Image (cartoon, rainbow, N blue to C red; front, side, top):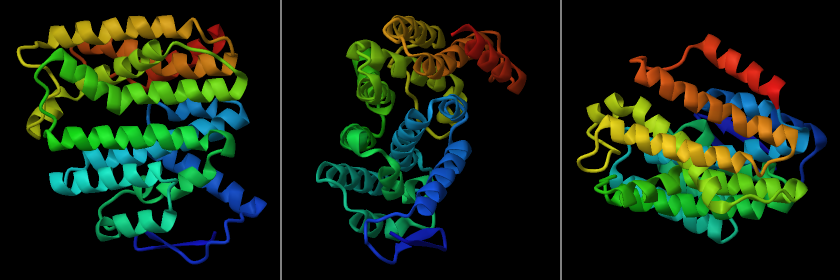
Length: 293
């Protein structure tokens, strides 16, 4: 399948479904380049995975990031977000047709990021044995994001917060657990996997509170203080620690421990009045995780 990049949009020129070795290598390099541009938290741990896991987790992350960029887009209208997310969810459920997806996003191609426009590439990049699970989790996430866009992200109760964080992050934990199971039969608790994602997302909510307030969105339940959200985040990160106990493969443990350790240090920094942790702190955490697992 050859692709021409023009005016920030891909036009499929042929659909043979056959990739040469060079095309596969090119796609892998481009996937890692896009990953580096879009994820400060996951790029480093993904690069430390063994080759098969590196390819799989990178493609899965990029698929979810593709739809996340639609939900977070600052220029798209709510109706447009719902349309794109519901339609993408349906396409993924039906097996996914790249040409149909490109037709769907074409009217918005000038403003959508590369990671979103290239969803078809990320699915092509994903190994055959796990790609259906990735489609399933990404479809459920897109459906949930669309539902929350329809509600204008109005979170009133803790149950609402649990529901929202399940769709935008807990499903990442579920998908990762599916990948671990596929890779080497690693079994993990689904609820703990969801808590792993929730913990990371709640730290993001704390870190981005001021920015969210400025755009008129809050992810804090009605009546919650910042301390309440810290309690919520810490409770989920403690469950994430329990999740880690099910992981025995070193490369998987290192991968999961890095974002978990970064989240814990970020909470500490936020409670100290800092906006984020420094680049030096990130490097220190990564090296410590690599040497202690």
